[in-house]
Length: 136
Length: 136
DNA sequence: GTAACTGCAAACGCTTTGCGCGAAA
DNA sequence: TTTCGCGCAAAGCGTTTGCAGTTAC
Image (cartoon, rainbow over all chains, first blue to last red; front, side, top):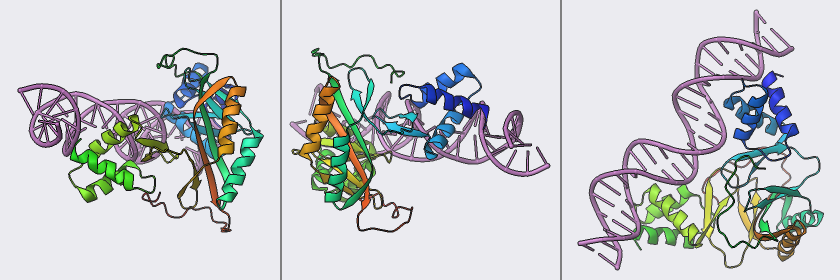
């Protein structure tokens, strides 16, 4: 267990969002600036394989990470701000398993992402709020 | 409307699966071998923007296409064979909208993928059937 | 004739990897 | 000491793009 891995582990255990690799690298370097991007990639992959972390792909072409969840949840992506909200819905989960069985399969995993806009928000604009990179 | 676009459109309208770009290119060239990969990429993107096609990402790092659906459906991915099965489930759709509202959002899109293994299949093996590239 | 489209090859963005050095046990 | 992890820079992969020539209309 090296210092780099410790730092990266800490960054992710403290994260309340879903940082991409670059963000993890930035945060890790704020703690110890001798951590290379390659190491971040290698370590994140390692942690993912050990099931310490989960990798997500929310469609922007870069991987995002969060600690593997004890209590499983899915994500709602605010397409205006890029914000990511976690939610659980036992009912939907249940129906997924049923649907899989109906098709002759045993469900072993799933990906559910809801893309949505704020309810109150009536702005007609097409442009999403300036893409931040750091958010969620 | 050029010959290339006609061929690519035909390839996708005849497809019963969810080909990736390389597969589309291969099939298009079987009809007319003067179609470059760049044109395939450009045309698929164009068709996607016009909502003639839908682009999917099933997690293998390459885009897959199918014709935009009149009647919306989601996908179940057979993780053993790579096969992709389409399904519809009104109940799940409904619950997604409800969940989004509960979180203060208006649902505008979603992605639901079920990863599963055949029910009958009791093989303990970890290795998926040789990855084909052409399948589904 | 002009605007739109194409093929080619180079570039891109994210991610992985070969290698020689350095730290962990 | 021996193994494992590191940083660096180069390569890999799917995808996009600049450019000059070609095609549609």
